[in-house]
Image 1 (cartoon, rainbow, N blue to C red):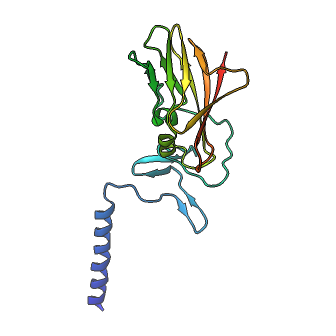
Image 2: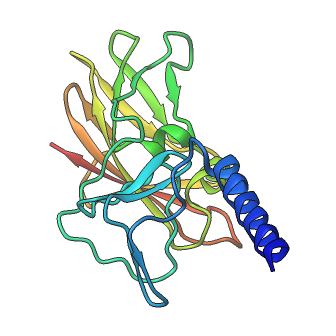
Image 3: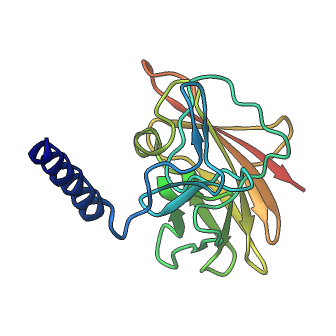
Length: 205
């Protein structure tokens, strides 16, 4: 009987040592009260040291969040990926244009674009191919952002990249004067015929 108790004691001590080795210096996988239907994590929930849901219920995602169902959000605020407005300058060499990248259009809410030439310049929007590879991967996807002509004078004209078309509101223009804003919506309208990507421009005048 004594030998059995010693064996059980050694086994229990071994489990304790293994537990200490495995979880020493690490947070417990789940804290709080658990049952089959819910998990109550009082101090929040973290993944790889990054807080996803804090103790107050605030939800933060730094990567890509994908939802296949309906999302209902009140007080929705669009923000930039890095909380900084990119400064883009029109090239001073012919054809005097700035070619926007998919990252610039997909990751930012406002693009500041200044002309590097005296009077005019061209804003060439990203092509369908690169936009589809970045953020518009499904027919019906849209991406909206604002462009500011950050120049002190002169105007900038929109142009499109490959497999894309440009649409303006009735009686509107595809150019923006100095310190004017334009709202741009990129919409993936089809996957079987060209053009696949439509840019809709609304200029605030």
